[in-house]
Image (cartoon, rainbow, N blue to C red; front, side, top):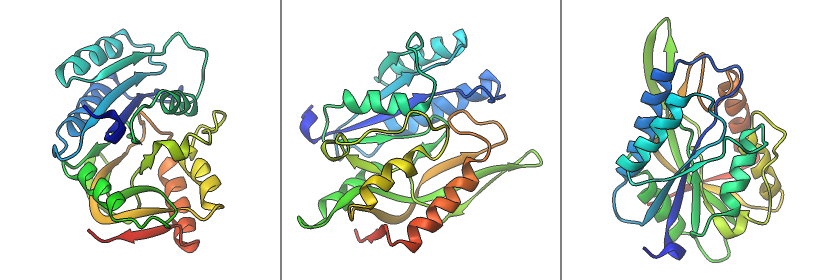
Length: 240
Protein backbone atom coordinates (compact mmCIF):
# COMPACT_ATOMS: atom_id res chain seq x y z
CA UNK A 1 0.00 0.00 0.00
CA UNK A 2 1.20 3.49 -0.89
CA UNK A 3 0.97 5.13 2.55
CA UNK A 4 1.73 8.57 1.16
CA UNK A 5 -1.55 8.51 -0.78
CA UNK A 6 -3.74 6.65 1.71
CA UNK A 7 -6.23 7.53 4.45
CA UNK A 8 -5.93 6.54 8.09
CA UNK A 9 -9.39 5.92 9.59
CA UNK A 10 -9.19 6.23 13.36
CA UNK A 11 -11.84 4.69 15.62
CA UNK A 12 -11.23 5.89 19.20
CA UNK A 13 -13.01 3.77 21.82
CA UNK A 14 -13.51 6.33 24.54
CA UNK A 15 -15.99 5.73 27.37
CA UNK A 16 -16.91 8.76 29.45
CA UNK A 17 -17.46 8.43 33.22
CA UNK A 18 -21.16 9.30 32.79
CA UNK A 19 -21.78 6.70 30.09
CA UNK A 20 -24.38 4.14 31.24
CA UNK A 21 -24.62 2.17 27.99
CA UNK A 22 -24.37 -1.59 28.54
CA UNK A 23 -21.53 -3.53 26.95
CA UNK A 24 -23.81 -5.38 24.51
CA UNK A 25 -25.00 -2.12 22.97
CA UNK A 26 -21.48 -0.70 22.91
CA UNK A 27 -20.20 -3.76 21.06
CA UNK A 28 -23.04 -3.67 18.56
CA UNK A 29 -22.29 -0.03 17.69
CA UNK A 30 -18.53 -0.61 17.58
CA UNK A 31 -18.84 -3.58 15.24
CA UNK A 32 -21.22 -1.68 12.95
CA UNK A 33 -18.84 1.28 12.91
CA UNK A 34 -15.75 -0.75 12.01
CA UNK A 35 -17.64 -2.83 9.44
CA UNK A 36 -18.89 0.35 7.71
CA UNK A 37 -15.28 1.58 7.52
CA UNK A 38 -13.99 -1.74 6.20
CA UNK A 39 -16.65 -1.84 3.47
CA UNK A 40 -15.62 1.44 1.86
CA UNK A 41 -15.69 1.42 -1.93
CA UNK A 42 -12.16 0.26 -2.84
CA UNK A 43 -11.23 3.25 -4.97
CA UNK A 44 -8.72 4.67 -2.51
CA UNK A 45 -6.33 2.90 -0.09
CA UNK A 46 -7.08 3.16 3.62
CA UNK A 47 -5.97 1.83 6.99
CA UNK A 48 -8.31 1.32 9.95
CA UNK A 49 -6.95 1.85 13.45
CA UNK A 50 -8.88 1.09 16.64
CA UNK A 51 -7.52 2.91 19.67
CA UNK A 52 -8.73 1.64 23.04
CA UNK A 53 -8.12 4.71 25.15
CA UNK A 54 -9.70 3.91 28.44
CA UNK A 55 -12.29 1.12 28.50
CA UNK A 56 -12.24 -0.67 31.87
CA UNK A 57 -14.36 -3.53 30.53
CA UNK A 58 -12.52 -6.82 29.82
CA UNK A 59 -15.35 -7.71 27.44
CA UNK A 60 -14.80 -4.54 25.40
CA UNK A 61 -11.04 -5.07 25.39
CA UNK A 62 -11.39 -8.64 24.12
CA UNK A 63 -13.96 -7.60 21.53
CA UNK A 64 -11.59 -4.98 20.11
CA UNK A 65 -9.03 -7.72 19.48
CA UNK A 66 -11.63 -9.92 17.76
CA UNK A 67 -13.04 -7.08 15.63
CA UNK A 68 -9.54 -5.99 14.64
CA UNK A 69 -8.70 -9.48 13.37
CA UNK A 70 -12.06 -9.82 11.62
CA UNK A 71 -11.68 -6.58 9.65
CA UNK A 72 -7.88 -6.48 9.37
CA UNK A 73 -7.47 -3.39 11.58
CA UNK A 74 -4.52 -2.11 13.56
CA UNK A 75 -5.33 -2.15 17.29
CA UNK A 76 -3.71 0.01 19.95
CA UNK A 77 -4.22 -0.45 23.69
CA UNK A 78 -3.69 2.80 25.61
CA UNK A 79 -5.52 1.85 28.80
CA UNK A 80 -2.34 2.19 30.88
CA UNK A 81 -1.59 5.72 29.69
CA UNK A 82 -2.22 8.61 32.06
CA UNK A 83 -4.80 10.57 30.06
CA UNK A 84 -8.37 11.70 30.67
CA UNK A 85 -9.97 13.03 27.48
CA UNK A 86 -10.56 12.12 23.85
CA UNK A 87 -8.33 15.03 22.78
CA UNK A 88 -5.31 13.10 24.00
CA UNK A 89 -5.98 10.15 21.71
CA UNK A 90 -6.59 12.46 18.74
CA UNK A 91 -3.19 14.06 19.27
CA UNK A 92 -1.56 10.66 19.72
CA UNK A 93 -3.04 9.26 16.52
CA UNK A 94 -2.17 12.42 14.61
CA UNK A 95 1.44 12.31 15.80
CA UNK A 96 1.76 8.72 14.57
CA UNK A 97 -0.08 9.16 11.26
CA UNK A 98 2.00 8.35 8.16
CA UNK A 99 -0.72 8.71 5.49
CA UNK A 100 -1.70 11.71 3.38
CA UNK A 101 -5.14 12.00 5.01
CA UNK A 102 -6.60 11.23 8.42
CA UNK A 103 -10.23 10.79 9.50
CA UNK A 104 -11.71 10.23 12.97
CA UNK A 105 -15.07 8.53 13.35
CA UNK A 106 -17.12 8.16 16.53
CA UNK A 107 -17.15 4.50 17.55
CA UNK A 108 -20.96 4.57 17.68
CA UNK A 109 -21.32 6.13 14.21
CA UNK A 110 -21.30 4.69 10.69
CA UNK A 111 -20.30 5.78 7.19
CA UNK A 112 -21.81 4.92 3.81
CA UNK A 113 -19.65 2.74 1.48
CA UNK A 114 -19.10 5.78 -0.75
CA UNK A 115 -18.16 8.20 2.03
CA UNK A 116 -14.39 8.00 1.62
CA UNK A 117 -14.55 8.05 -2.16
CA UNK A 118 -16.75 11.18 -2.11
CA UNK A 119 -14.45 13.01 0.30
CA UNK A 120 -11.35 12.19 -1.73
CA UNK A 121 -13.06 13.27 -4.95
CA UNK A 122 -13.85 16.59 -3.27
CA UNK A 123 -10.18 16.92 -2.30
CA UNK A 124 -9.07 16.14 -5.85
CA UNK A 125 -11.29 18.89 -7.27
CA UNK A 126 -9.87 21.69 -5.15
CA UNK A 127 -7.73 24.36 -6.76
CA UNK A 128 -4.11 24.87 -5.72
CA UNK A 129 -4.81 28.29 -4.25
CA UNK A 130 -7.80 27.14 -2.18
CA UNK A 131 -7.27 26.93 1.57
CA UNK A 132 -9.08 23.69 2.37
CA UNK A 133 -8.84 22.20 5.85
CA UNK A 134 -10.80 19.03 5.11
CA UNK A 135 -13.68 17.48 3.19
CA UNK A 136 -16.84 15.90 4.58
CA UNK A 137 -20.44 15.10 3.70
CA UNK A 138 -23.95 15.80 4.91
CA UNK A 139 -25.31 13.53 7.65
CA UNK A 140 -28.11 11.32 8.77
CA UNK A 141 -29.10 11.54 12.42
CA UNK A 142 -30.34 8.61 14.48
CA UNK A 143 -32.22 9.41 17.67
CA UNK A 144 -34.06 7.26 20.19
CA UNK A 145 -37.37 8.68 21.39
CA UNK A 146 -39.60 6.69 23.75
CA UNK A 147 -37.71 3.56 22.86
CA UNK A 148 -38.16 4.04 19.10
CA UNK A 149 -35.28 4.65 16.71
CA UNK A 150 -35.68 7.40 14.14
CA UNK A 151 -33.38 8.30 11.25
CA UNK A 152 -33.59 11.54 9.33
CA UNK A 153 -31.48 13.79 7.12
CA UNK A 154 -29.58 16.29 9.22
CA UNK A 155 -28.15 19.51 7.79
CA UNK A 156 -24.80 19.06 9.48
CA UNK A 157 -21.31 18.32 8.26
CA UNK A 158 -19.65 15.04 9.08
CA UNK A 159 -16.28 14.69 10.68
CA UNK A 160 -13.93 15.80 7.88
CA UNK A 161 -11.16 13.93 6.11
CA UNK A 162 -8.18 16.12 7.01
CA UNK A 163 -4.89 16.84 5.28
CA UNK A 164 -2.52 15.20 7.78
CA UNK A 165 0.50 17.39 7.10
CA UNK A 166 -1.56 20.57 7.46
CA UNK A 167 -3.19 19.76 10.78
CA UNK A 168 -0.03 18.31 12.33
CA UNK A 169 0.98 21.95 12.82
CA UNK A 170 -1.64 22.29 15.58
CA UNK A 171 -2.88 20.21 18.52
CA UNK A 172 -6.30 19.24 19.87
CA UNK A 173 -7.25 20.64 23.26
CA UNK A 174 -6.83 17.80 25.76
CA UNK A 175 -8.76 19.61 28.51
CA UNK A 176 -12.13 19.62 26.72
CA UNK A 177 -14.84 16.98 27.05
CA UNK A 178 -16.98 18.23 24.14
CA UNK A 179 -16.69 20.31 20.95
CA UNK A 180 -13.09 19.16 20.47
CA UNK A 181 -13.30 19.28 16.66
CA UNK A 182 -14.92 22.71 16.60
CA UNK A 183 -12.30 24.26 18.84
CA UNK A 184 -9.51 22.69 16.81
CA UNK A 185 -11.00 23.85 13.50
CA UNK A 186 -11.42 27.40 14.79
CA UNK A 187 -7.65 27.83 14.72
CA UNK A 188 -7.61 27.19 10.97
CA UNK A 189 -10.84 29.05 10.19
CA UNK A 190 -9.21 32.23 11.52
CA UNK A 191 -6.52 31.73 8.88
CA UNK A 192 -9.06 31.59 6.08
CA UNK A 193 -9.42 27.82 5.72
CA UNK A 194 -12.77 26.20 4.95
CA UNK A 195 -14.19 22.68 4.93
CA UNK A 196 -15.50 21.38 1.62
CA UNK A 197 -18.80 19.55 2.13
CA UNK A 198 -20.43 17.05 -0.27
CA UNK A 199 -24.23 17.39 -0.29
CA UNK A 200 -24.93 13.70 0.24
CA UNK A 201 -25.94 12.20 3.64
CA UNK A 202 -23.14 9.64 3.89
CA UNK A 203 -22.35 9.88 7.61
CA UNK A 204 -24.65 8.53 10.34
CA UNK A 205 -24.53 10.25 13.73
CA UNK A 206 -26.14 8.44 16.65
CA UNK A 207 -27.63 10.47 19.48
CA UNK A 208 -28.88 8.56 22.52
CA UNK A 209 -29.31 9.24 26.21
CA UNK A 210 -26.11 7.33 26.91
CA UNK A 211 -23.39 7.42 24.29
CA UNK A 212 -20.09 5.74 23.68
CA UNK A 213 -18.09 8.57 22.15
CA UNK A 214 -19.98 11.73 23.17
CA UNK A 215 -21.68 13.36 26.13
CA UNK A 216 -25.47 13.74 26.39
CA UNK A 217 -25.54 17.37 25.24
CA UNK A 218 -23.16 17.00 22.33
CA UNK A 219 -25.98 17.09 19.75
CA UNK A 220 -27.07 20.56 20.89
CA UNK A 221 -23.49 21.81 20.87
CA UNK A 222 -22.96 20.35 17.40
CA UNK A 223 -26.04 22.14 16.01
CA UNK A 224 -25.00 25.46 17.55
CA UNK A 225 -21.48 25.07 16.13
CA UNK A 226 -22.90 24.23 12.69
CA UNK A 227 -25.04 27.37 12.64
CA UNK A 228 -22.02 29.46 13.61
CA UNK A 229 -19.96 27.89 10.83
CA UNK A 230 -22.70 28.60 8.28
CA UNK A 231 -22.91 32.26 9.36
CA UNK A 232 -19.16 32.63 9.00
CA UNK A 233 -19.12 30.90 5.57
CA UNK A 234 -16.66 28.31 6.78
CA UNK A 235 -18.22 25.46 4.82
CA UNK A 236 -18.24 25.43 1.04
CA UNK A 237 -20.28 23.07 -1.14
CA UNK A 238 -18.35 20.52 -3.17
CA UNK A 239 -19.48 19.63 -6.69
CA UNK A 240 -18.65 16.06 -7.71
